[in-house]
Amino acid sequence: MPRAILVGVNIKGEFFDLDYSLHELKALAETLDYEIVYNVRQNKDKIDPATFIGKGKVEELSVLIKEYEADVIIFDDVLSPAQNRNLEEILKIKVIDRTYLILEIFKMRAKTKEAKYEIDLARYRYMLSRLGLMHEGDSRTGGTSGSLSNKGSGETTQELDRRRLENEIIKLEANLREIKKRKINQIERRKKNSIPIVSLVGYTNAGKSSTMNSLINYLGEDKNKEVLAKDCLFATLDTYSRALSYNNLNFILTDTIGFISKLPTTLVYSFYFTLEEVKNSDLIVYIVDISSPYALQEFEITYKVLEQIGASDIPFVIAFTKIDKLENSQTNLPPQILGYISQNLSKEISYKEYRFTFINNKNGAGINNLVEAIFKELSSTFMHLFLNVPYSDGKTINMIEEHAQIMTKTYLNDFIHYEILTDEKYYPNYLQYEENNQIVS
Image 1: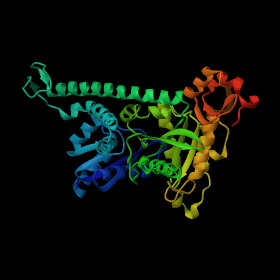
Image 2: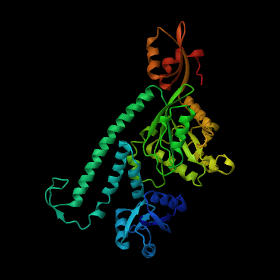
Image 3: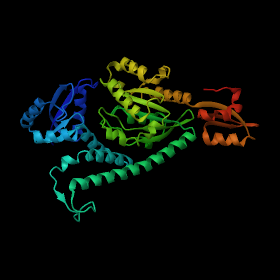
Image 4: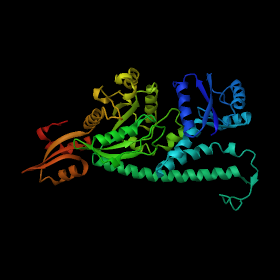
């Protein structure tokens, strides 16, 4: 088991707690079977462009490497290729950063073809920026029989690898675009039939997959619809969607990848394809581990990622999980999170008490409240109509059958009585047949 020293820097102005960040880094490193032998910390106004940490800390690291017989140094931030190279030259030891750890864990956990494409895309982009570290001192090489290129002599191994990585990136992006097209087509079909999409989002290990399974069980769905739920970082990298129903309302529930602090930019870019479904959601359920002392920071990180992908203004419900870990199971709304919500999420959305629910996925407590909150929010997002449509108006009947979610349908003597959920844009077509000429919700 490689022995590792962790290095964390508290940069002036950063909002995240260094203790928690290093605790998280330790968990990431241990996931990859590193043994953590020491933590090094430094407070700085700004990073050193050459070595990230100051000269004194570099000298301190040299001593600690010998004292603890360390095999690797792991930084809690993203190192530039130059910083990585300089540190390895000075310390005479392997140096890696937080991005490297996350990419390796993702590579290990990816199961579906889509997730593997996304991870490889992020890894190749990361490797492309660091080719110089791997090929320093390369001599010129000819096009040998084992070469990946048909280029003639005078090309270095680094240049060959660069072209190979660039070609792989082009292929992966093309494959992901095809997957994205299929996803968009699926989403458009759901929208056409007024089937709302509900996405579970949150910090890694906050309880998204467990919440999805709790909802599946509560709604009496097939156990085969359940997803993997483990108490570990990034248990789920793939997006899982399940068709569910409550009170005759059909909706798609989606479980997404968990977020984490200092999420590498390359990963956010790569996972745009996976997060396409989140962008097109009708409702987002924020899953927040209320037992975490850093619940506010974890919520803020989740919200900022949604901002990056253009999904921060979607209507929301918040489910506070792991209430069993609280003393006396107190379920008071955290004032810091409420303050953040009022400043950021509730610009045009009035406060609604049902938006905030507390759940325990171990025994199912509070799941009924979450289901009701989802139902109420979806009912207010779509138009809930009661219509009496005469048999003679086949055009309107066809439109309802194709574009509305039919909750109930009753054949009467002179007309068909519909209870539907529909997108607001179709309302003018149904107005004349609305029962009592009013919307019922």
